[in-house]
Image (cartoon, rainbow, N blue to C red; front, side, top):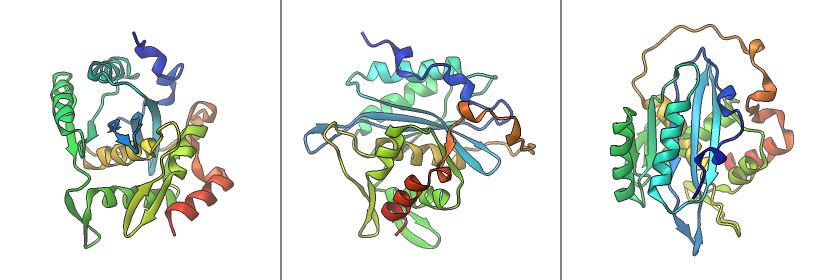
Length: 236
């Protein structure tokens, strides 16, 4: 039996800043690509000032819906500082039936949930596009402007490097273990969750000096090699 707590980084609650109340969650549901099973990915985003911090990133494989529910329940019950999940955005493009069941389960935990169909149409900067393209453009714009902070972990870099632009949209390579930019996709949804949820506006003082960088995600712009790869793969 999978031990839920083993999926989480040790002392993961320390990653969160008590001064900032907005928490958005993105969940990229596991699918199958080229006969390889992709992992699930859950990302928690906490905006601090104009920076979107990806405070918690989980990438794991399970075929049991109950495990997914237990993971979300663990997050809800163990968020520090009285913080609450403002909204969960779930990719319902392929696994809509499962996503609907999860939405109801999250509502039972008093967590708002939106199902996102990447193939549905929207408009961005006056241009019509599908949601996959919209969310990708939004996240890439934030990367370009230095507004994204991610865990300084190799898995995060691997997943982002799998993404590339093609024919006006986004695609991703899949590796031999099934990784398919799942962390990137969950980030897109988490970023969308914090911008689309109806949070009350609050004036908050920004004090980055008090943050322990060894316990916080590292700004992506501080890694020149990684930044160059992002520019080559995503922004050209």
